[in-house]
Length: 117
Image 1: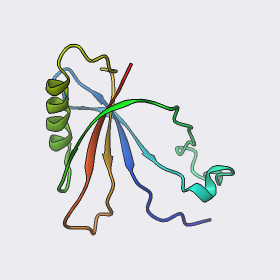
Image 2: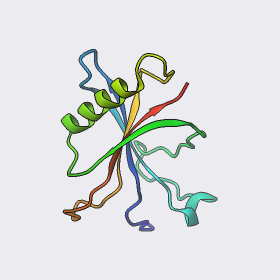
Image 3: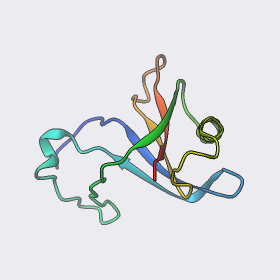
Image 4: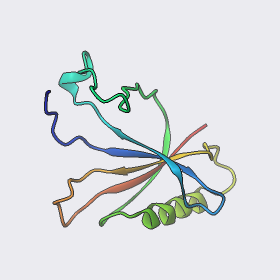
């Protein structure tokens, strides 16, 4: 019953298929605002879970515009190419992040994160 407003980033966990496209299995995560983190409200929808994300080191790339699946896949491929074969990171998933509300037409920020192993 409490409105928390827009949080950033909106993070999507992606589990890539063999061809790099998104599988049907994705998980959308929203950051709980600071004032609610010590005692977050209990979700009334059982499909919503509160999870604590462990500390992680990431490899990241940033791009602008209204991001679509094809943009995230493209930038994930560019990040993979930039890292080469020597970087150790999780290959079974990565994060797609958006930082802006849908109404913001310019100066949008999106990121792809690979989690370092």
